[in-house]
Image (tube, rainbow, N blue to C red; front, side, top):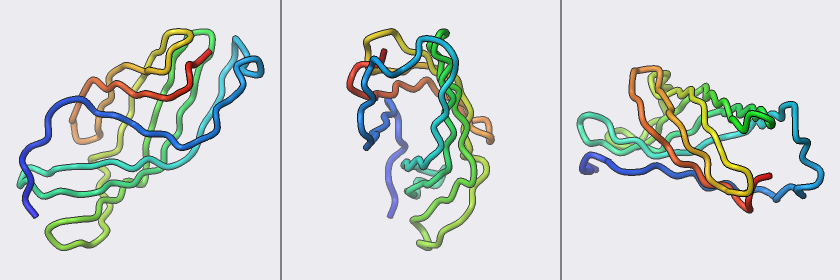
Amino acid sequence: MLYPNTTGSSFVLSDESASTASIIPAVGSLNYMGGLTGYYDDKNKFAYITNDNIVLTSTLDKRTLNLTTSNTVIQGAPDGNRNYNTGLQLTGVLTYVSGTNNFTGTVTGASGIIGKDEWENGPGRN
């Protein structure tokens, strides 16, 4: 399958249970380790689904999220095979405002791709 170049905003959908705001500490850090799934168009306009391991570290008093992905695998056109693609591994720092459910910041890929992302996670963060 051939697809047009992808432009525009990125988004994240999370399928988790909400934390009760009163149990989230005001200082310190929390870690999340899990999976991330995305969509990627290559320079030849072939489309792929991506799967990564992700680590998010939240520094609560600074309202930042440091993210790192690893073990990136793509699967899709033209051959349908699963292939590792370390060039799509991401690092970045996102920030958020108290009481909101949006994260914003810059994310950079190992291959040099860079973008400003807006992530939504709800309900409102503490």
